[in-house]
Length: 529
Image (cartoon, rainbow, N blue to C red):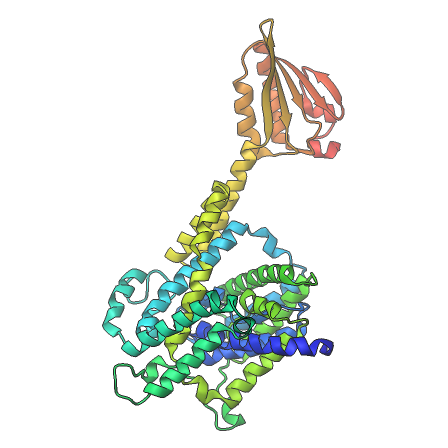
């Protein structure tokens, strides 16, 4: 692992600079203590980094879980109870890994996953606008369309102008301009700008702004309520005292288990999707063992919950930064975790000079990237089977919550599959019309189930009298008993309409059969093969 130190050390520095503002920003967006984001980043780097089989994946707090975290803290009533859910979610992930559930991500349609990410982006974007204006009342910023005040998201945005801070607006605007110019202009002109991450530059600009205007008593001054507030330890004992510990006294609370299951599912899914994306970015095309990854993430979340950290997933933003800056092994991930640890131990004073407007700007960019309008056009071009579940997931998550939205999107995706299956069970076409006899051929698909009964029966019932029908099942590997019964019922109708049937199967060719089950000698056609 240390053979590539020359590549991994610079990569770890860049990942650290990307991760620090993200850890703080995601904690802010989640309505959790800011220090909890740093804890999750440290554990994601060190604990998960050591246990993971991923060479380039980087774990930490994820924007995709911000919706779950903020809603869960509000529902459970305290952060200490939420930590219990994080611990339980970690244990569930370990069990999933041991049960070889690493393929779970493949059972969710990509349209639903893309819809989930876009919806999260929209919510994050909308919820950061008040912070970008200087509105610092976190009780209003609930990640739900209907907020605790009785207002919805848009009414809340309309009232944010009552809490405008000129200083916050200015530094937010400066940060946004820096981030956009740095990534879209400067990074394309010189390698230096690619090595130094834009979020770090925005953080440095924010600290400089605060040092200039602090105590100036001008409209440009940013007050303490709009600044990062990480506790500053005087010694190692004080540092340990910053950690929050779970309250296990309410283990019987059913809400905790609902939150735990939600975190385990969403975190596992996001991790597995990130693993797949990171493996594709890896120049050496190494394959991450997904079951081991679930176990490592579960251990990380268990540790994080026990010491007050946010839930952890593997995250594509930091992972891709690791790949693009030349990381070779997981040493870069581990080193970035230690760098986060040293920063909160040695330079917490500088962290507290960071305006929240800077973090809001970083999250606005993240939200926009997650909900990029191009994604909507791309999904539309893919057709209704992709676009409809995508849009339903987006609207449902924004209007309700994450779990309901995903389930609705998944339900629509399943219905879409069933409709396509209904349509594609067979192929019926006319081959010849002569001497008053219509020759038709019906070819069955490889899989024909009870869902296809209606389509097949409708086709058979519309056949005109004096038809010669050829039914070909030579390519069919599975044919439900329900469909065989449809064919047997039609055999009676066929005689009354002078319809002659030729049934072609691997067992032979049969003229006007009466009992299709007797042809195979079994109840289910699949057993005949």
